[in-house]
Amino acid sequence: MLFITALLLALISQSVWGRKSEPSLHESDGGLFRGSDKYDFAVEVAAAGEECFWHFAHQSGSFYLSYLVQWVTGIAIDHRLFVTVNSPQGNLMVSENAPVGRMNFQTEVTGFYRMCLGNHNHFGAIRVFVNFGVIYEGFEETKMETEEGEIVLNNTLAGIEESVQKLQNQIFHMWRHCNFARMRKGKDHYLLQSIFNYVTWWSATQSLVIIVSGYLQLFAIKRLFKTNSGGPRC
Image 1 (tube, rainbow, N blue to C red):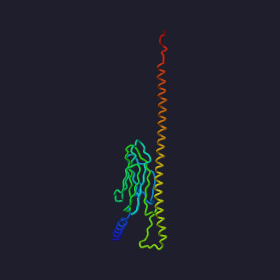
Image 2 (cartoon, rainbow, N blue to C red):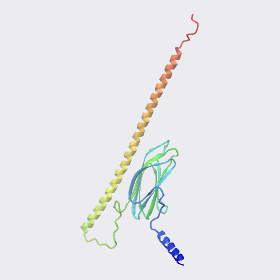
Image 3 (tube, rainbow, N blue to C red):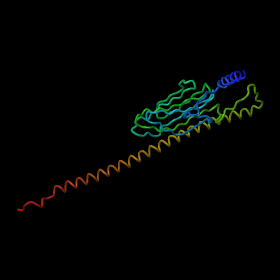
Image 4 (cartoon, helix red, strand yellow):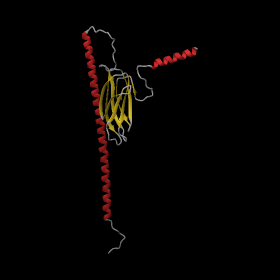
């Protein structure tokens, strides 16, 4: 009887702990981000491949995603990247199909939002710089919760607090613009490096062709003036 009672208590506790307000993902899932409100890094999407990431966001937050294709490898000719963001329920929030994109939307549900980057090219990889995160009512790192019914006695302090929140929001957007400019700088760097490698290899190839063609011409002219020393003389 005691064993049955303990088993029932265990089942009840599992059912209670299973009803979480936040969705749970397996720890071994790749591309899982949680803890910080902003990330920026570069990732390489394989040919005809897709890279997905998850980011946790609370309700009534401002979710943003910026990306820029820096360079392509192989014989890839399409620089476009198909980017989608899905809600925790699987609904499509925003999508973009371009080499450069900026996305913003309000989070209506608390949970993990999925971002997927798709490569159209079947014979070349794409390197893309990604910057995403969540901002809550002008706070950069955390969301400050206030109790209901709280009365602000000092209007001056309330005005200062509002001004500081607006200033933090403006600084955050300035940081986003600077980060996007840094992404463009990285793209220009890879473009210049690619042009330099192209010019170097093409010049070396032309020099080699000129040397080989000159040697062949000299060999052909030498054959024209070659005489047969073993023949009879007049």
